[in-house]
Length: 126
Image 1 (cartoon, rainbow, N blue to C red):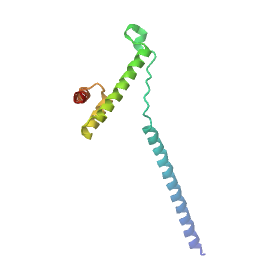
Image 2: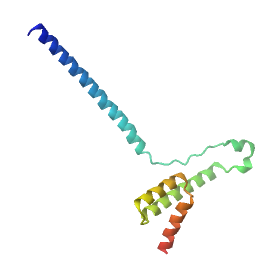
Image 3: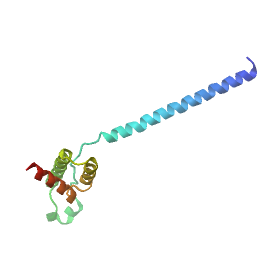
Image 4: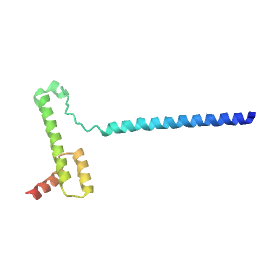
């Protein structure tokens, strides 16, 4: 082997090592970002935690519900949202309208649009 062939071979090997390092870095980056996305998609559990001592409780305790009453109200709202979601899934409406109503349910569960859709469903059932 001549001197120039040795240098060319070393450069090719260095380039190969650099490409391999960049490839492994890209693979690890994709795995890291993919795990974060997967964890974010699996979090469908809803907690019904409430603050134990709201600021108003320090000054006007008569106006504030107890923590157990607030938890019960929050759980009933969550149950209401699940019931309405089941109703919207069972009603025969277009997918676009169903998607809009589900988004509205997330934003404002007691909106007029949702009440109208549920009322239509209950009228059709009866």
